[in-house]
Image (cartoon, rainbow, N blue to C red; front, top):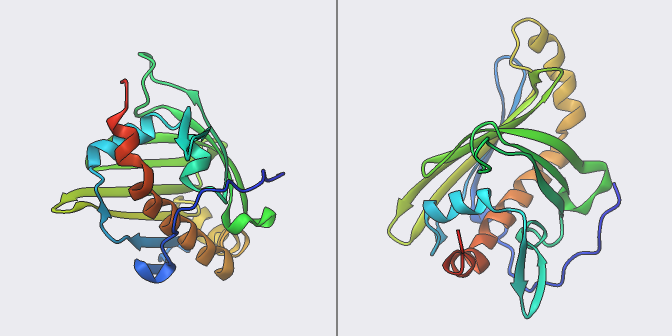
Length: 210
């Protein structure tokens, strides 16, 4: 994957140590990467729902319009588009996203996936890609309103949730898809993009038209 030049957006990225994190291996061999972020100040669950329904489009930063998805993580994000919407044109369960990004801007850690949305409401967001009809990863987010903003927890489970076959293949999938250094890069990437919500989402949401 060819990576575009990083955007010059002067947001302070939160460090790995700002969040609670955990990397574990489930009994069937799947890997689980878990993050409990610092409270996202000034952001509400309603804003998060709106954001994931409106990832396409632009955002103005310092007088320059840039793609919203790229602005969300100016270094690692490449592109996002909705390839399938709900019958009424909205983004909800059943919608499909095409996501392209590279953790730590490393081409060896590039992601180019089509992922299906299972849930999106003010309690959280669930999606995951499939191969040959089998779910190979699952990303879950939980949101809850607190006094200063939103408590945000998310996790990724990668591997096959298939009896016998999963137990046989998941150790290989884990080593291939998420070696230790890539797992750490994924954690850092998520902490940075979630922290960036504080810098733009409240103002963008205030100007929304739908």
